[in-house]
Length: 392
Image (cartoon, rainbow, N blue to C red):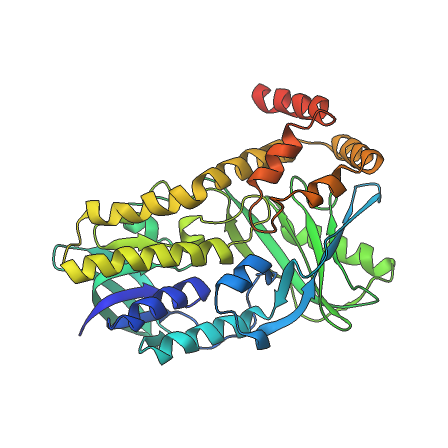
């Protein structure tokens, strides 16, 4: 059987791409290695207001809203940021995935659950995906291929598109919490060197505790869990830790003849926070547009698919570049630099001024980062960090 499009991966990005294409009348198959949602996602499940307003996020998957967050320095100094009205939504990620897959099915997309994609190749005749299902091999064929399989599936390398140039590991577990009503962010070399940790309330008495780290994320997560438990903030663990890779840079190339790569698989992720759902959905729209043009014209040339990369880079590339540069600067900051930034921000109310800015956004950090990086008050610290970065 020849499908019009094969989509590998049934997360929100893959399912949304399938929904858009199936709604245009194309025969779409979504290949997903898990045969049911088993709670193994490492996603924190925070979506910005703009994402929820722009895309059809079902209200029943939203656990709570967030309008504030508390940042903790290595020594325990606090900066609380708050803006009127919901700025983000904390969602049940497994329910979100299921709901989006349901929307795609309603449009006619076929879901092949329990099919593990082993290899993909492209010829002049079409795209072929070799799968394993119930210990037997199956081969699926399509006129075009969407890779939305998340981080490091190996398929992009097989297709000659390479791997993300940089990545970090996320670790997270669900916990019982005591009196935690705001998102909490923890900084410091002893907590999450070069990155950050979080405690995100989900339901009354429940939360998600996690962090990002290049090395030994599980060890750092256990240390943080024990520390917060000793403080009485965390009461017990509900689940074992879950781990997942998060790309910090895009693939060298996100297209080929008959192929587009979207979402985490393409590295379309905020380097500052590791969040990828919103950017992935934006790119899914762009991918579906190019695929529709290719299918309608029977033109699957590499030049036709190159338009996809030009379009998404026009929308996101500057944001990703600024975020990555800021990420590298922060990674080279010691605890003393972080403490100094906290002192300056608290003393001068810089965080409040940034929140009042017209271009403040939960999802678009470039403008905010440029303001912070060029702030006169922070100039000395930034210059010191740039010197360290250049020296390396």
